[in-house]
Image (cartoon, rainbow, N blue to C red; front, side):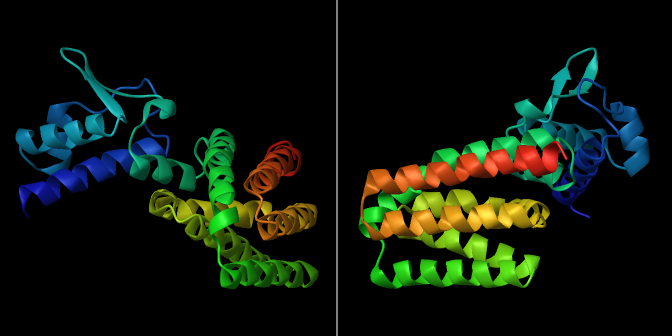
Amino acid sequence: MARQSLVAMISDDLLARIVSGEFEPGSTLPGEQDLVTQHEVSRMTVREAVKTLEAMGVARIERGRGTFVNPFNQWTSMEAVLRATSTGENDASASIQLIELRRMLETGAAELAAERLSIQELDLLREHLASMRAAHASNDVGSFVEADLAFHDVILHASGNVFLAVLFEPLSRILAARRTQTSRVPQIQANAIEEHAHIVEALASRDPERSRLAMDSHMAQTLRDLTTYVLNA
């Protein structure tokens, strides 16, 4: 196997063990010789694998002392962060921070979309809202989440800013998982439908400020629902 493939395999294994909680923040990763023995590779390969984790902000190398796991909030790799949050580690903190990120970006997307979305996109938003209502009535969580995600995707693309859609693409998997978790609560579904209806009305008015505030209200409601019905349940 090529050395680069071995490097990726070892760094991925270490990341998986960190994410699983085997190595907690502040703890020391296995020494170089231990990793050489475990994986039957050269010291150079092990060093490159550890440097990969260092580049991701997951670990730090302290010469003469060893390699230590960094706190979650110091990680700089989207891949690593998504791996950690998708397993349930740092669940409460990650859920709140994800909403904070969405609040910053999606309010701006709604503001831009107000003047840029087409009639077809506005009709599509109404269709997704209708699908959410139907799914809520039939207690179909999967269809509700699908329509919810599609609703927001339309707004991101209607903003006309390609960077917004690109930024959100890696988050799609974790967003789907979080929505499935929260959307099992009927009241959260009902609140989301009401907030989405306000967003459609605001966008239909073509008022950027009204649209921004409607999306901000939705994000605030999402955070309240998460705290009330999920984190403190």
